[in-house]
Every structure is written in structure tokens, then in C-alpha cells.
Image (cartoon, rainbow, N blue to C red; front, side):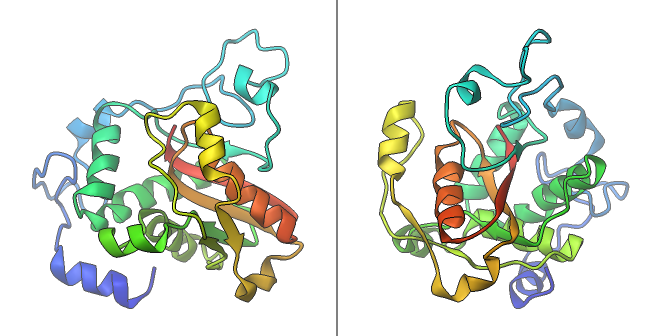
Length: 238
């Protein structure tokens, strides 16, 4: 992410060799941004996992899908997440989003880049991110998903495209039932006219969390209807 934003954050947060989770300083940490003790506490998603959304499933799943994906139409091809949304990862994501710790994108971004390389999940034409509504962007000051996406774009040399716009101010998704989430997000996203390059392309869409998949699916729907060939998803946790 070779940009003014990253240079600015480097000046404000000289956090090399500091664990973002427990704030311990150790020269062995370097630019991993996590100490060995905290790293051991992170719960990774262990396979078998749903081939569509990466949710852990039973070994005897006859089609490799979880119950939710088996009974629902998905506009995206595949969603991948390295971590379970619990414990220190859950707390770190919450801090990243709501406690002005925008610099956490370095830790999470590096984790996603390593995961993508290890799983050969990096063959995309463009990278995009789930957008925030303008009102929320003004309040928070940054889009956590965009910071991740731009970091991945820089590290993997895949062009980032500012493709999506959130046109509908939605209610907070957490705490809502699955169907309410879908209704809340229906037609909430459009593709910007400046993003014509995505037509007939494969796109990696980046978000922080996969819960029911409603948000990334609505974004994928908008991208596919605009002309993208295929949309894939990456999130920190699910």
C-alpha cells in the first residue's frame, strides 16, 4: 500500500516490534505485529470447511457445502477466511473498527496475504472492498475493509479498484436475524461508473467479517449485474 495514508500512519504509529493484541514489545516480533503468545491463542478455521463460505462442516457432508449454502443462491463463487470470529481475533477486529485503530490493517492485511499465498487464492484481475455509507465514513474516518484491500493489492501486485458505492444507509447488521439482514441490505450497493474496467473480470472482494454472507453477497450481486465475470471473497474471520 504505497500511499500517503500508509506513510502518515507510519509516522503516527511507530509500532514495529510491538504486538497489536497485547502491546508487548519484543524485537522478535519485527513486522508481524503479533507476539508468539498471542499468535498461539488465535483459533484458525480447520477443515473440513464449506467449499462455498468456509464454515466448518462435518466430514460426512456429501457435497462439501454447509446447510446455509446448500439452501441459498450465492452470487459470489467462494469466500475464504483464515480465522474463527472469536477470542482475541474478535476483540482485535472490534478495536480495529470502533476504537480508531486503523493501523491494525497491517497485521490483518499481512495475515490475509500469507493465507492467500499458502492456499493459492490469489489469481484475480482486481481487488475491491465493501464500502461504507458516507455518513459512517465521516464518523469513523476510514473504511477498515478498504485499508485491508489496498494493503493486499500492494503486497500481491493486483490492481485495486474503487468499484462499489453504498447508496442506502442500513441498520447495524449485528443482532439482526438472517432474513432481516438480507432485507436491510437489499439494493444497498451500486457500481460506480468509473469502474468499467471490471467488466468481464474476476474480482476479489475484501471485508472484515463474514457472518451470514448477506453483505458480500449483495456486493457481489451488484458487481455481477454490472458485468464482472466472477466474484470471490476474503475476510479476516467468519
